[in-house]
Length: 141
Image (cartoon, rainbow, N blue to C red):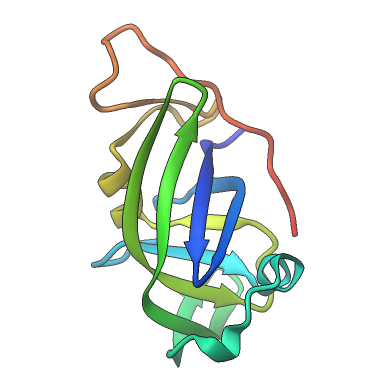
């Protein structure tokens, strides 16, 4: 199982809690979160209210054009014992991805330290040394 965390997204006047895959292959200069368009539709987010542009992203399946709204989302990592964030991020909207993805830059801002890639174990950088956190199951949209 991969590293998946629980996040709270604040987009416009909506608040969405879901799981997100920490994707170290999603390399960005600034914090970005990629969300499936189906998640936004189900949550009632009106994309026409966001100012953005279409950009091309290289993916494992090839190049794809996605809507990007700069600094349009606040992301917090939500755990039973604490909340970390609100990190202001770029919102990337995917017409094909089914899972929320966290870029490497956003993972760094949230203080995520990966302990085991295969088992999905992780911790926060400021957790006590012996603290190990378990991954969440995927939430597909």
